[in-house]
Image (cartoon, rainbow over all chains, first blue to last red; front, side, top):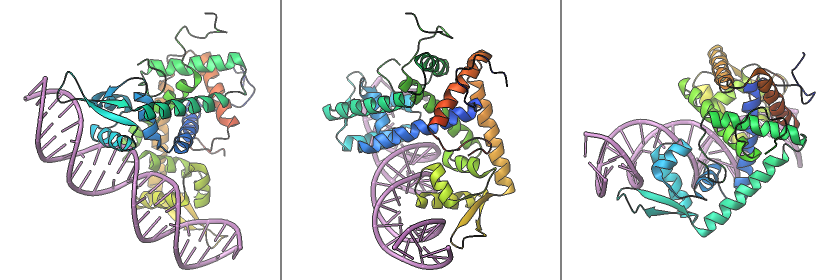
Length: 156
Length: 156
DNA sequence: TATTGTTATACTCTATAACTATA
DNA sequence: TATAGTTATAGAGTATAACAATA
C-alpha cells in the first residue's frame, strides 16, 4: 500500500525478481539479434568490446570475466569468421592485441545499433521523465558496482 | 544540463547500455552464487522455476525459451544430481511433470534467498523512495514485455 | 619468478533432425 | 495428424591443468 511518489499504478515486483527478469529479457533480445547477424551472444559481446578500441587478451579476461583459455577460444572462433585479428603487441613480446577487421567493425556497429533500438523500444510505454529516472537509477547501480564496459561507446 | 527530477547527480548512461550492463551484473551474481551451490546458472534457473510449482516439459520450453531437446538434457542432468524428478502426467500419457526433490527444494530456496540478498545489496546506496521507484519502473518494463516467471515466488 | 597466452581435455548447453508414443 | 518428449549428433562456451615464451 501507500507507495512513495508512484510513477505508475502497475504492480511492483521485489527488486531481485525485477532485476533477474529484466536481465532475462535483455539476454533474450541480445541473443536474438546476435543470431540475426550470424553470431552467438558471446561473439557479439566480444565484438562490442573491441569495436571501438583494441584490447589485449588479459584485458578481455577482466572485462568479460571468463578464463584466459576461454578468451583464447572465443577469439579463435571470431577470428575464423574474419571479424577480429590478433596483432603482436609492440611493447610486450608475449602479448597480443585484438582488433576488429573492417567487416567486424561494421557488424559490431550494426549489432550495437540494433540492440540499442530494441532496448529503447521496450521503454516506450514510459513517459520521458520516467525513462530518464529509470536510466539514472539503473546507471547509478551499474556505476556503483563498477560493471565492466561490455556495451557502449568507449568509457571504461 | 537540466535533467527532469534528477534523483541523483551521477552521470547517466543511455538506457540500452544501462540495461545491458545491469544484465551483465545480474548474470555475474547469478553465476557466482549458482557455482557456490554446485550448480550451473541454467540448473539453478530450472530449480527456481520448478521449486514452488511442478512444470511440464512443454511449459519449461516456454518459460526458459530453449528447445525441448535442450530442456530434456537439462532436466536429465539436474535429475542426475538428485534435485528434480520426472513424474508421469496423470492426465496425458505422453507428458511428464518435473518436480523438485526435498533436497532440490531446499537448494532452490537457499539459492533464491542468496540471489535476493545480493541483488538487494546492490541498491543499498539508493534511498528508499528511489529504490521503490526503481522497482516500479523495472517491473513495468518486465510486466509490459510479459517476461516469463523465471525468478520469484509463483505468479505466472 | 611472474606474466601472457595457448593447448589438451572434459563437461555443460544448445539447436537440428529423426524418432517413439500417445492424443 | 498433431503433440509430448527423447535420442543422436555437432558446435559453442567454459574451466582446469599443463605448457611455452617473454618480462
